[in-house]
Length: 153
Image (cartoon, rainbow, N blue to C red; front, side, top):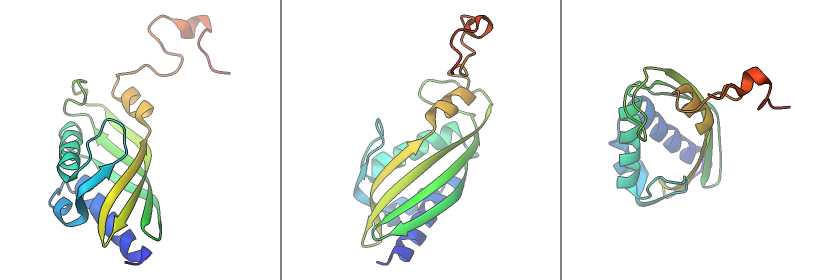
């Protein structure tokens, strides 16, 4: 398939799964033996389905905006912004109702019109800070900010 065809498939896949919550596209666009390279996430089509369900349960109003996308050969790259509200448990973090906005980049590799591998980098620090699970830099619970300790140069 051409790079343009791969781009269209990957764009449709991510738009359907995240923005629309439609995981029926997994059977069409994701290889059963799909390889996930994000630490802690499962490989395989069913593994990705479970991952999507976990995130959609925690953030039912996910809006993924693709800021940049390009394709070269069998690879497609997306730079994106994820906007959502923390309404469900995520990794043991109870829902806060906080609005989140964080960024990431994803690379997928396709074979014969099907996604076979994925690499993602997510701004997890911002995500967890906005959920209230981590303090902002310089705002630790020990008063380090007030004393001037812990400030970054």
